[in-house]
Length: 374
Ligand SMILES: *Cc1c(COP(=O)(O)O)cnc(C)c1O
Image (cartoon, rainbow, N blue to C red; front, side):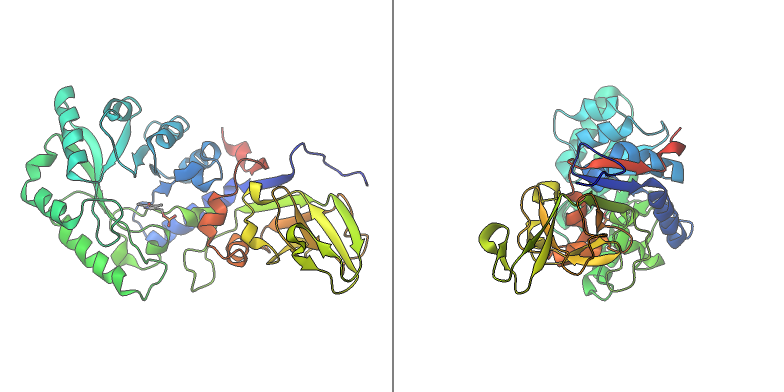
């Protein structure tokens, strides 16, 4: 084996460009044209590391943050400036009220039971408590269903003692600009917010921001676009790439026509073939559905994935590369500027969201732009 310039104890290196995330935040701010922009950092900032990503977004100007769970919010709160507001999308359960207050977090109230719970806690403390109220306008997932929204509009006292800082809803089809449900949800949200005069409203996540000003209301709520995934799948990606996933070739071997590669002998060589083995597998979130689909980049050229993705390893076809490029220790790029996460995901039969959030904790992580953290 040749000597390499860097030897790491992990298999592959995932580099997260915090400057690019800040740049993406500013692209979304420009698109929102004066409407404030939140940052969704649920699922550990889509798997990229909320402890590094959330402060970078605060430095870029974000003041509203969203997580899915309370424990995510507690972790994020600890790394953010005191004036940041952190909201929990999945709402509140009985018994968690004190933790929300202790950590200065806002529950997203998703049904009348949660409204009553938060109101009771405000009464008990003898002061108003801040919260968000979410309406279901057509996704049938989270938020007050239409019948409960009507009750709340008719009986506003149910929110007495609750400092309602935002009313929100979520679009089901924002990545398809022509889908009729977008307009339907917009109209329903307009009608619902009439019951909350003066309360800021929020409807658009990443893709919704690109549906135009009608969808912007008072706060954009992007997640995935911050991390470089294309929020406009029908058009070129307006976002900057954020990730680089790189590994070094472990071994190169030559096989004869008729010999097979990997589990299940899923690839059988039809010509003399040179196979490079790299230390990334499905245990690293590199989906097994990428087997025999897609490619890595070696010296900027395509090296196709050959045979099955296994737990810790992937085999690449490097037949057409000279030994000077395809040798143990040579760097290959699985995700990078010239190999976008959206394309990697498409080759695996899924979307950028899933590939991104699945990358997992196994890589050596490098954060670029962290020097400006202080
Ligand atoms: C995840 C989520 C977002 C962010 O969505 P992206 O498509 O990643 O921008 C915004 N709002 C709600 C309610 C969400 O669940």
